[in-house]
Every structure is written in structure tokens, then in C-alpha cells.
Amino acid sequence: MKETVVSGIRSTGYLHLGNYFGAIHNYVKMQEDYNCYFFVADYHSLTTHPDPKDLKANVFRVAAENIASGLNPDKVALYAQSDIPEIPELYLMLNMLAYKGELEKVPTFKDKVRLSPDNVNAGLLTYPVLMTADILIHNASKVPVGKDQEQHLEMARNFAQRFNSRYGEVFTEPHVFRFDENTVKIMSLDGNGKMSKSENINATIFLSDEDEVIRKKIMKAKTDSGPTEPNMEMPDYIKNLFQLMQLVSEQDVHQTFLDNYNNCNVRYGDFKKQLAEDMSNFVKPIREHAAELQKDEDALRKILKEGAEKARESASKTIAAARKAIGINYY
Ligand code: TRP
Image 1 (tube, helix red, strand yellow):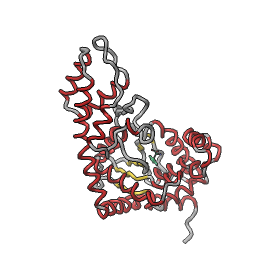
Image 2 (cartoon, rainbow, N blue to C red):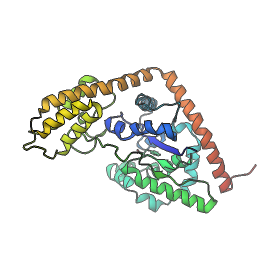
Image 3 (tube, rainbow, N blue to C red):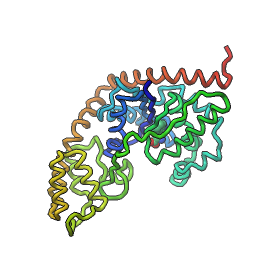
Image 4 (cartoon, protein in one colour):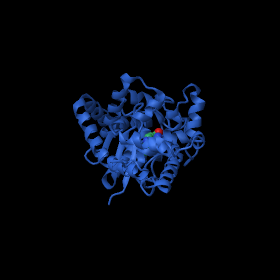
């Protein structure tokens, strides 16, 4: 039997190259061999009170961008979290086993408290519990998430164990799924940290960027006056540009520029021009496909509804078992 994978996709912001090469690219490979549930985490986004007018467009856009990036709704269940009422039901049950003290200690919670002290709501505190419900509702064993989410996964295992030892074996303990050890990290084009949808958007390439925007961003990417001796170690921001070229350009093109670098005759202007062109060609079909999908709202609605049906089939079994184990078994 195929193992079950669950992952949540944030519904805020536009997808960028970091999301693509760091996550979606792996989801696309996983969909062949695993029983995959991928959802747009719209309930999670409510912690920051987004404008109700924006919610639907955000959810549809994120779904469209993921499909355009290669996620196949015939192979995976792609759904909106809020279409699965079993998730908040399980969240309620798990909240009774989650202690205030342990939730307050979570680093992501402490960060949020520091960044927005005026909005420390209970949903923020119990974010890891909702995330646990997202995962346990399908009894997933594997969860492809980045380093920043490892602590949440540890909590999910604790909550699963706690439930099981109190009420009997209902849940599988989920583990972080490192699908590909070689998964690349895409740095921001200004050399400051990871590519991000919120930090410096001029140094982040979005899957929705037009060719000209991509060109401008790449031409402005941080470089230096070039290597001063053969085979010099590259600074991180140069390494990042070469890595991007390796991902989107022909192999011999990448090799030629690499040789130039190692021989100290690299011209960054030419290098970036080539990278910009190849990057535009890479992003363009994804951008156009995503735009086309977003225009066809009926089709997207159908995809999300079918995804929700698949997800509820699995969720309803789990919630029935959880209710029974707890003793909610009256009729
Ligand atoms: N917390 C995750 C993030 O910020 C998103 C997420 C929500 C998630 N629920 C999940 C990821 C369940 C994996 C499994 O990226």
C-alpha cells in the first residue's frame, strides 16, 4: 500500500522560485508514488484576519499556481482546508490534549508574539494543533516540510501519542519527509537570506512575473568585481546565480559560464543576460498556464470540489474512529 503524504500550502502571497524548487517540484515527483493530500491552508491564514474580499482569489490563485507547476489533481487530492469540516472537529478534540504551557514555548508562536503583540489570539497559540489535525485526519506518515516546521511536526507526534495512549490506537505518528536530500535552497537575489514573498520582493522571482520584470530583477542581482584568482570559492550570492542557471539553462551554457568564472574571465553582464533569458523561458509557461486556469473559475471550482470529496472520504473514516475512541458513540 502507498504511504500517505500530507502538506499544507499557505494561501497568502504569490509563489516564487524558492517555493517552486524547494517544495512544489518535490510534490510533483511524490504524486507518482505516494497517496498525496495537498491543501490550501485557508483556515490557518485567518490568524492574521485577511480581508474577506481577498480570500477566494488567494485560494484559487494558489491552487492554480500549484497545478501550473505540475501538481496533477487527478493524482493527488488538492483541496481547500475549509472544505473539510472533519479538520476543525479533530482540532477541537486535540485542543483538549494540548497544554497552554507547551504551546507558549513554540518558537514560531514566540516570534509572532514579538512581531504582532496586538494580535496574540488563541488561533495563533493553537496553530500547531490545527496543523496536527490537518495531518492526522488522513493518518499521514510523511509530511514534506522545511526546517522551520520541524518543531510543529514533533508536536503533532506528541499529540498523536497522547491521544493514542488515552483512547487507544487511532493515529499514525507523522514524520518529516525529506523527499530529496539535494533539494536546493534558493537565496534572495540581493544575497540576504532565502527568497521570500515578504522580505525584498525585488530580489524574489515570482512565478507570476512577466519576462521584463524577471529581466530587471536578475540584472539587478548582487554581484561583485569578479574572481581574482582561478578556481576561487564563490560567495553565496554568486553561487546562487550559478545554481539558478543550472536549474533553468542548458547544461553546456551553465558549464561555459562556470569555466569562465574559474578562469577569471566571467562577464557578469553577459552571464545575467543569459540567465534572465533562460529564466523567462522557464517561468513563462507556468505563468501563462496559471493565468489561464484562474480565468476558468468553473474548472478550478470543480478541481477543488473533487479534491475535497477525496479528502473527506479519508477524513470521515478517521473522525468516526476518533469519536468512537473518545466515547462519542451514542446512537
Ligand atoms: N505551517 C505550514 C507552513 O507554514 C503550512 C501547513 C499547515 C502545513 N498545515 C500543514 C504543512 C500540515 C504540512 C502539514 O508552511
